[in-house]
Amino acid sequence: MIETHKDKEKLLYLIIEKVPNMIEAHIQNMLQKTENFHKVIEDLEAYRTSLYSIYTTVARILFKENKKYIEALQQLEKTGYEVGLYFGEVKEMNRETFLQLTHSIRIHSFDYVCSLINVHLSKPEERSFLISRLFEILNARFNSCVNGFL
Image (cartoon, rainbow, N blue to C red; front, top):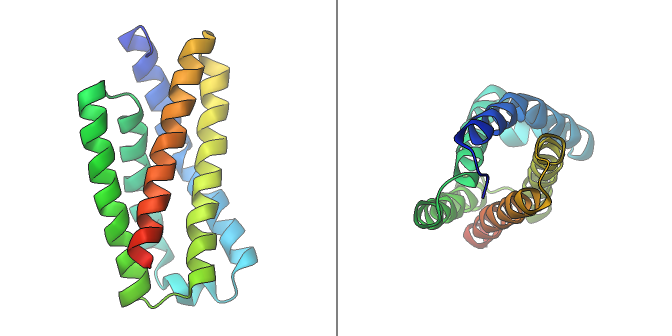
């Protein structure tokens, strides 16, 4: 874990500051890859707002102590499952589009956050710890969304 509170706060701030860029990169990617993406999502601004909320939550989970981390991860899985249900049953999104959507945001999230971790943490064990956690968080979210979609 990161040793000082100051380092945690600085990195959390930097990650949250990058969330809008990450979301915009994801949306541009989806607009290029998915025909009628505007129609599929319907309200891009609401989608941006929702992603911002999710990924600021993810950033905060990254720095929680073990017990709180496990609880937050379980809650993230629950909400991810509900998101999958919504896109599958309510929005009736096709499976390929849904998988592209979840994969794209996962990849952009991982790339942005890993680059910040690598630049701003000098200790390899701290970098490794946070990158492993980030991978676990994003996989939990992705898997629960996919399970809800099925």
